[in-house]
Length: 259
Image 1 (cartoon, one colour):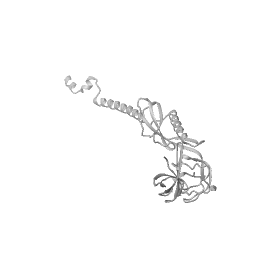
Image 2 (image 1 turned 180 degrees about the vertical axis):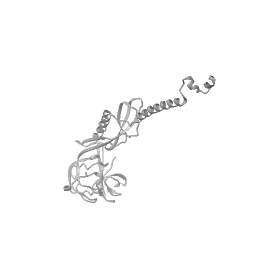
Image 3 (image 1 turned 90 degrees about the vertical axis):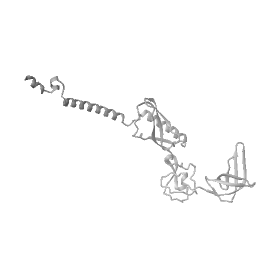
Image 4 (image 1 turned 180 degrees about the horizontal axis):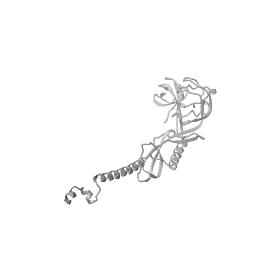
């Protein structure tokens, strides 16, 4: 009869093994610990890349050198680094090399390239930078509307950021008095080439002088303008011999033709 009582005993109790419930709990705990470790590793690998000061300094120095090559004499170059795209997930790199980006402007809002030259992954990225070129320029003392004619007493020399707009400041030693503003100018604003209306040097049909210069020669002749001579625009002229030339209006009744 004793054997009958033994028949009802659970086999894992008789053998000393853990119950299925206990085995399930231990398995779940093990899986939870493994998942936590995996999540921590993934979170660590997904952390945004931080550019070290040495690499950032080298990148800014490269941009400053490029900006200085085009800046006016005595200009102060101020370069400020932005932030890398936070979505980037870059592998650690022992040596990062900066390089100029073809086509990127040397002034204003621009960018510098970064490449990993010594690391497990050869990645590339771009660091945004802001470049200021601070130099003297003609700045307005008063607010001037579009159509205003420039007078010397309206302007003064002051430090301005040459890189604040695509058009460069007027770099003449004297204020271009008599020129007309194409758009309004605020007090303290630098006078730029794009702020001025293009000059009309002569009318269509007017007799003009034609000059051409080259290595070891200079030629001057007369002709008739076939369209108005607007500053910065091409103009067609007919020579006394009937030949049609295309040149640039560069002064009063004066056309320059490049050989």
